[in-house]
Length: 172
Image 1 (cartoon, one colour):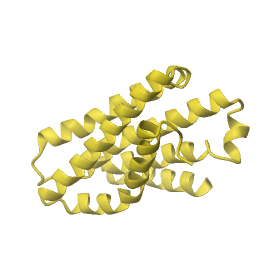
Image 2 (spheres, rainbow, N blue to C red):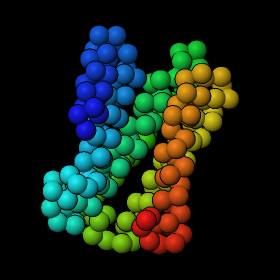
Image 3 (cartoon, rainbow, N blue to C red):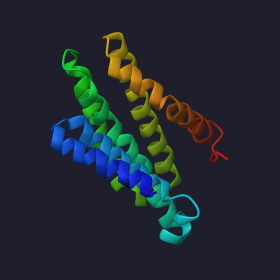
Image 4 (cartoon, rainbow, N blue to C red):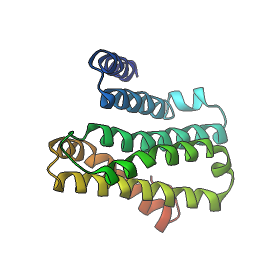
């Protein structure tokens, strides 16, 4: 956890010194992933006592992690990539993810809302994948790096969606 905080702090410092927006989003992603890691044992049950509080924290952390990926990719694309509509769509992931995170207490308590939540998050992930593909087709070298870096997480996410939306149970 200390490595995540150190990486996030170093990236935030780079954002201030270099005045590059994508560093700020990388720092936000590092901090959000650090929060997400804290929802797993052994720290999770201790920090978030009670199963409901625990699941609310994990759900909110997941939603925040998805929320910051859109602006991260949008700000990381090279200046010569002329895709204003693509950038707007990627930026729209942020308020959507924040709304989902804020609604976490409701989503944990109602199974039908939780299922709807998973569909919205699936839509956000598909938006990210479409954004990566479109950016790569437009010649973005940075998008190729991000696609390679995010591929394991995205594939794991699709497996989790299969379990939760098709099999209607949590991934083991």
